[in-house]
Length: 262
Ligand SMILES: [Fe+2]
Image 1: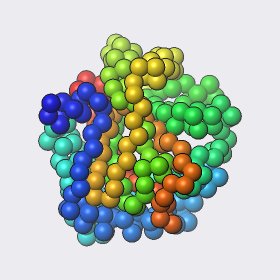
Image 2: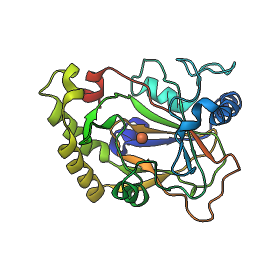
Image 3: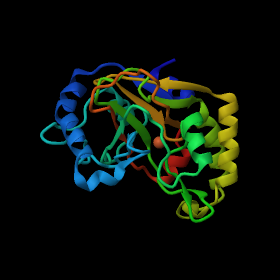
């Protein structure tokens, strides 16, 4: 099975070390750490100081360039462009930093939501947001994929990404069933709450939970519909003082491509 087939079956793929990517990180890494301490980003520190969420906190351009780095290089973005057919602009990367003790409750989080964070990695599909007082799940963002690029040298027990292997197939069946009867411009108005929760239960019951760890210079790619989350920081896990730092790119694609591409 080629890399494309592997990704299509599992819903995620790891990429080995790239010297070009390490050279890019030599520019982007220090700016990611600076973004963490930018006073304008203070609101991103949550879970009692154990997680810096850092959505779009990196000031890279549409090609992934920042501070003279040149465009984002490496096999992961190459795979996204050549095999997945991604031809759009990159978004500003999320700078996700976990610290020892994650998770602690997030501000305003219910006890049930905190238990779900602790026991189920706050598993979710990107783009599905709880909307309104009754927290209806609606699809509001249409990312082509999720690409993770570790910045710091943390070990495999320092709050790694959890992914439910094959869950993208369960979710894809649900999304197509629920959304195909409607025009794409109406998709964000569709209440997906029940269908999503049922699909999530099915994924928990039938898919293997895999912890994904990588080192700076390596990368991983998640299918846009894969169920995933951040796992707890395990006692004694090692990370440098700056924490477990990972950049995530999550660029938007056309809605029809989001629903109907493999
Ligand atoms: Fe996510």
